Image 1 (spheres, rainbow, N blue to C red):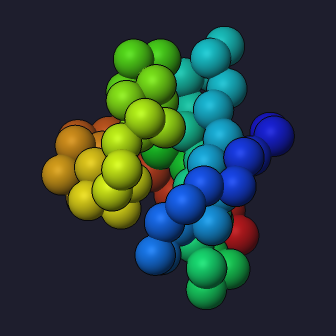
Image 2 (image 1 turned 180 degrees about the vertical axis):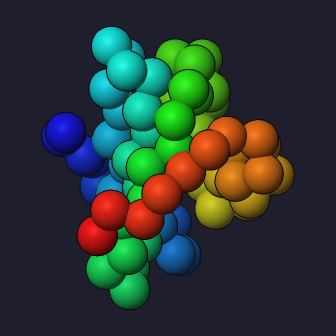
Length: 70
């Protein structure tokens, strides 16, 4: 999955696969997580948010299944 660098204090890059609705987030510590069943509009919103970490914590972390993949 392609990820794009983002301006964030704790997130390095974010990617999205619309076919599987998988959001992939890489943190500056090297950890990579995939969140499953995330609709396209949530990806669009996080990419447009000034605080991507806050958006992730508020709307994605506790709402979607995830696993650490890296």
